[in-house]
Amino acid sequence: MKQVEIGSTGITASAIVQGCMRINTMTISEIEKLVYQDLENGINFFDHADCYTDGECERLFGEVLKLHPDLRNNIKLQTKCGILTGELYYFDFSKNHILKAVDESLSRLSTDYIDFLLLHRPDALVEPEDVAAAFDILQSSGKVLHFGVSNQNPGQMELLKKYVKQPLEINQLQFSIMHTGMIDEGFSVNTKFEGSLNHDGSVLNYCRLHDCTIQAWSPFQYGFFDGPFLDNPKFPELNKKISQIAEKYQVSGDAVAIAWILRHPANMQAVIGSTNLKRLHNASKAGNITLTRKEWYEIYHAAGNFIP
Image (cartoon, rainbow, N blue to C red; front, top):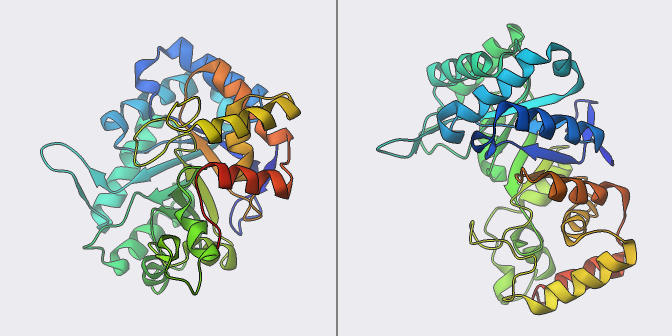
């Protein structure tokens, strides 16, 4: 399994992250099997959020950690906070909410510390001084070791960094073969083509310049949760090309889709939300192959992308 350094921490972890958003449908025994198969496949990074089924995913994972206390030292545990669900979907990055959310996540996860805490999507009412105060308390207490954000652009990150002294080590962003806005605008500089529209403030280059690890979420999806593109008849040319490359490397299409993300020199991590053991095993082989430059571009073209 390919290892990547996370931000500027000096910590290395698996290039593939196990997303835990769907484990609420599993039994404790099934989650145990999932975790240990991940470790056998070299995946040691697990991603949560307090809003995933109102904390139930964290609680179930915590039950596994209770059964296997030695497991905690062998994994990197990440969670996110700031999204509130219920009658109204909204965001809260206030000091009190962040502190409360972390305490509740620690309790559900049955652990004393979180390796990485991310602010989950932007809060339009964010007061960065409040975030800074919360981060200081969490760091000094040992409850959180490192910090980051999700789905934030460079301006939003710079606003936080004006007050927050801890480095923002991670930015979790949607990125896949069929969701390539972060690189499209780079190809289309100085043109009026559709790809030249800059939707995210050149966040890819920003993160590379500031040693911030990008975690690519929804690596098998097209659109905004519109469905998987693999083996989808809507995308015949793309799937034909993926199949050809998969056959060459003797891996699955899942592995090729992940390998395409990992081939980028930004040293990203890919967050896989699947709980299908076979699919995860197949996808984990992406960490053992390196696509050629030509293959990477062939896949990009086959996805319907235009390069001037």
